[in-house]
Structure formats: C-alpha cells, structure tokens
Image (cartoon, rainbow, N blue to C red):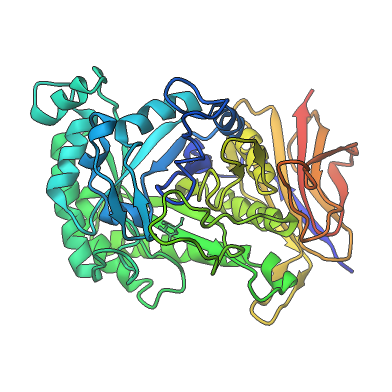
Length: 498
Ligand code: AHR
C-alpha cells in the first residue's frame, strides 16, 4: 500500500526562503543571448534590440538574479571586448563552445537588459585565462561612481550611475579539465582569494562566490571544496554547486528518483562548509550558491557548424518527465532554504531553458517553465520543517526513494501555506495526508497540477501539451488535509487563512 503523510507546524521552520533561489543564468552560448534575449530586427525587439516577448515571459517567472556571462564561456572572455562602440568590438574565436563571438552584446547591454527583464545582475569573472587584474577592473567599471579610468569609461559609454552589482562568481567550474585555465584546488583557492581580496578592496559591499565542484561525481569532490575554501575563506561569502540530471539510459523510475542526489549533494556540501568553519574556529558561516541546476541530456551529441555564430546548441526540448524532476530539485532546494541562499536555473532562454524562441518568430514556455513559475510565485516566505513519512521504492541506482516528494512554505504574512508535491509513482495514485498541527482557519483554496501527460510529451511553438490544470481542492477534516495525487504528477496545494 502506497502512502504519504506530512506533519506541519507553523512554528517549526527550516528558515526564510531567500528569493534569490529563483535566479537563473544567461551565458554567451548558442542562442541564449543572440536570438534569445537579444535580436535586433525581431518584430518584438525594443530600441535596444531586446526581445520584449522574451522579457515578458521572464517577468512571469519573476527571476530576482541572472548570472552572466558564463559558464564555460567566461573562462576565456575578455570583458573589455564587450564595451564601447559596437562597430569597433572584436570578433573572437570562442573556445569553450567552438563558436564565433561578435561581442555585439556585452556588460552594458546586459545591465540595460536586466532592467527590462525585472532582474538583478550576478556577474562572473574570468579566472581561467585571466585573473585578479581584469576582475578588479571590471568591478571598478561596474560599481565605482566615477573619477577613475574604468568608471569614467562606463560613464562615457552611457551609464552615469554605477550598476551596483552585488554578487560576483570567482570563475566557473575551475575543477573541470574541460575548463579553459583549469586549475587544481590549491592553485584555484590561492587565485580566488587574491582576486576576491582586490575586488572587495575596489568595492567592499560586494559578495563573492567560490567555485565548488562542478558535479557530485567529480573525483575531487570534497577535497576540492575543503582546500579551496580554506585558502579563500576570509574573502568569500558563498560556495557554488552545479548539478544536471539526465535520462540518457531511458530508465524512467530512476530518472524520477534523481532528486535524491540533489539532497545528497546539498547535504555533503553543507557538511564540508561546516567542517571548514569548525576547523578554522571561525564565526563566519558560508552558504551555498547553487548557481547551475537543471535537467540536461536531450541535446547531448547534437552537431553544429564549428565557428558559426549563435548556433542551435544545447537546445533541450523538455518533456513532461523533465518537469517532474525539476519539481523535485526545487523541493530539495526549498528543504534546505536555510543554507541554499542563491540558486540559478541553468539556463533561461533557448540553452537548456524554460523559454524557447524561434529566430524572427515566436517565444514559448517549455514544460519545465511551470514548476519553476509556481515555486517562484508561491514558494516565498519561510520553508517549513516537515515530518514526512512516505512509502519508498528502489531502482538499480537508488534505494529508499520517497514515492512522494514534498516541500512546504508559509508566506511571509503567515496567511498562505503552500505544499509542493511530486508523485513519482508511474502507475498509482497516492493520497497525501497533511496533518496541520497549528493552522487554525486555514482552508484549501487552490490545487494546480501537471498530470495525465505521456512522459515524453513536449511543448512546441504551436502547441502547449504540458500545462497546469486547476483542480477542485478538498477540505480539512479533523486537522488533516487529504488530496489524492495522480500517478506521475507535480502538484501545488494552497491553503489560505480565513
Ligand atoms: O550551462 C551549461 C554549461 O554547463 C556551463 O557553461 C558550464 O558551467 C556547465 O558545465
């Protein structure tokens, strides 16, 4: 008999949800920038060439921060190539992805675009082919009011006021041999420390993010974090995590279980952070920036013309099953909202993204748009501790996978309780029993679900096969709220105080 039971109490909280967990990512990669957010000449482009149809969808997602400009791209990027008169900017061989970069879009365009998309910038600096000098100059360019070489150049190029960028990533996936300028943990930790030091001397208000492991499966995982963190501890504020799930072996039960690896990864990184803090007898706590996460596998091995501009690469077309896995990853992040303070869905447009576009044509919502949309809209407030008891299943890779995966959030005003629940079971409905220990006057008022689709159903420009449906919510009886969740479904249950 399959079952799922949840007990919630308004006083028992994991912590406040930092809204920056609903961040995302735009890299100079494929059609994320060119043909994605920026397409001069498109019927919906504004005077800056920004696609307003795309910005409108991003505004729907309510993304508080967007990481830029990479990703692997940043490790070979000369940020100075992307400022000044567009006609004079150099065209470059972009070695991370094997394309040609026109540099028509750069730092100033990104800052302007953030305003149209209703978001804040989160910048990454190049610690692959460059280092502390280029990084501190970029901070000066972006954040210093004026009266110095780089800040006056920004003013000359049209931005009288500083951009006040708060979040800065110290390189990208520097543990990976695929990275330009890959380093070992000791080399990276020393460089990140000196770079962060100079960046903070340039603007003491910034926060810096040290690269953690680029996946849980890296051979250096754990050692990398410990070594790099110990060297850079005093000058960094967050440690990054990256994780992508896939279903290349077409093993659905296993794929749906992959959120358990997200839990395991977060747990291990917290343990490492606390170990280094303890070892150093430090009062300073470092939290997590989960600045790349998603499902990514459909586009693996896709071919494109080398050195072309803005080719169709990493354009995963997401299906219904992917949306459920994204739902479980969001739940895992919410369950550790106390330590995961920033997270970026990678990425935002066209490249492994919730939003797709046609060059010159439409923009539309992929399947994974929906769980992110609802979490971003209703998953703000305090994450609640949950005593969860559910039947479990095993796959060839994982044991004790909860049949129903949940997270619960109480809104800041204490008036709305939201439960996110994914039924992973392929065939069976499962009743979720939520025991409300102290929510007097709370009544179910909204139930939204993604259900009843084939696992491989996808959305296209013409047809939205996977979209949320509204269901009639039940009632609370004897302090217990019961809803029967369809097999393979993502659900959001909302209760309001009356
Ligand atoms: O998001 C796509 C790529 O995945 C990023 O460039 C890199 O950081 C990661 O490996």
